[in-house]
Length: 353
Image (cartoon, rainbow, N blue to C red; front, side, top):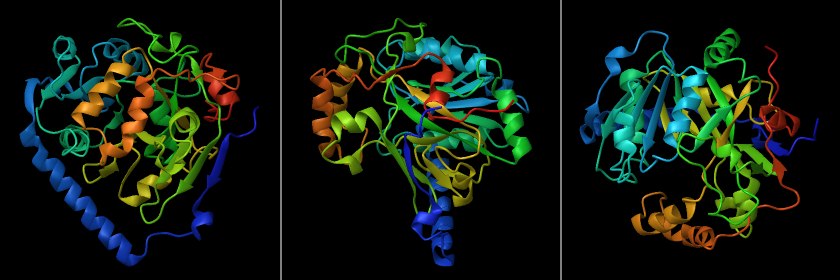
């Protein structure tokens, strides 16, 4: 077993705090505002293929917001089908490739489309939250981007039904995961994967560390940073590097509200379901397949569209650095050879099935 790659600051490191009464009141008001935003956002969505009538009690659902993901979606959908997802609830934000045609043809997908601003909808979170509110109550729901593949110890033999049964037996309603950037050995933009093929075969390298995790007050959400993107693109400003922790799998309650992607949600107590990397709870890894060949064109498009960050000007150097096609690999990089590799490097725990 490798030494843990995480530097962890838990509640004890923030004076063992919990939200004060005044903070809890403000958090409740915030949650209500977010739920109202999500409810109103339903007017942005036009149904292209609503097959939600097929959803049955006990089905595991996946919720996604996508744009121009025809390359990744075939494998991604099959990956989650194999894990036991029964139905996909998807919002398309005006794709210009074959994404819409691909999703409309899938019998286990319900599809909506919107031309509204992704940024103004809290980066699509309002739309996803409406689908969770309307369809996801009392279901185990997966929140994942098209470039994220969830894995956990034993996932080749134990599907999400096995996993969620184990979580319920523990009284655990949320499942945490580290988002792990994968990359190739050569320059950015050279490695590619044809639609329907496993992108991990093209980009199989990762940073085993260092990572750091803190728990923030008053929301009590984790904040994990580090890894390849910080090393390559935010070395001079590590506080601006991407957030790498998510709660991608939850037994959803219509009164809950995500506050920041699936990094954090309200009520604050749900964030405590995962104590972070190295914690005792079952947890997984989201394999992040962003750095395929199209990442360069996407970086140029994101610079033009300005839809992905609160202050896009701060990210101009990041996008330009990607467009310059750097080599992300170093002699310290490690190669992914199945979920066992991630357990060996301490990036997720073993699960005693």
